[in-house]
Length: 364
Image 1 (cartoon, rainbow, N blue to C red):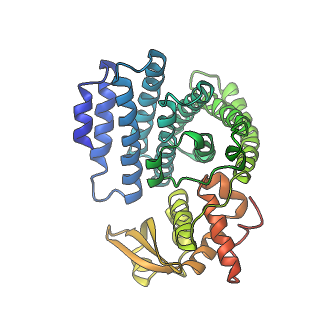
Image 2: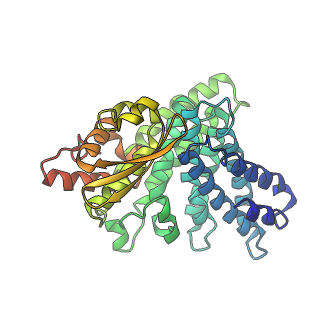
């Protein structure tokens, strides 16, 4: 990946060469064995999307307006990515920041796609630029970091009609909405507007050129608008058909989304009754990834505090029960985005076996 970027460096406009260098440096940083697998994956996947956007920028056939649009986004997102790797950024904040960059980078394909409606492209570009700016300025901390996570979750529903098959590697492709199946995507307009209102407030609240009074006012406005965005997000999610996946695959997608979105300290505490004794004694640095092993077991991989990489089988029923305690149903959509559909489908399967996944079937 780094070698490919170095080749790209000679093709991009001069104003982007330093951005390519920053991106290559970010990739070199995550080769450190102490880097958690999730952080490494987030940086690598983000870099792939940014490199793809750089190729579009370097293409002579790309319209000037689109080239300028992508140039602004690639610069801003690369700067934000670099902030997430700074040593003085708390690991929990840095991990969340990198997850948001990875999620929002997925929108670059839609923005650079000539088939994307101009209005949607403009909305996506504004949202990505604003949330990335706010993340960089706030360093992913506190309310700003959480709001950015919620924004990135909701964004997935804006790109359903333009998603490319290869995106399913990191963000599973959801079922099509009922209204999309009938040939309309009008249900996305209120959500796009709601997300954009939130990110506008985020940028205003973190812009140091604004007065403290204006920033405080924008922060309050952001909080108020976030409630409306979550409501529109829930409406968009309710339009989705359940994913066509067996219980093992549904549980895998659901679990991976939760492992990525929730802080590892919270996961370690919530899953302490299920984790192997050697995990407990060493401490878990990163709950990384789950892989289905039939319809009853997930193989969960982790990195321990001593940097040992390990894995262990977890029964799906008890694991989902504990995860449902950590993430209530009312928080599923906002925290996970599209994979929340797989969590709810997993809960349906388990309910048939008499296992209750918290409030996943009753809320959200």
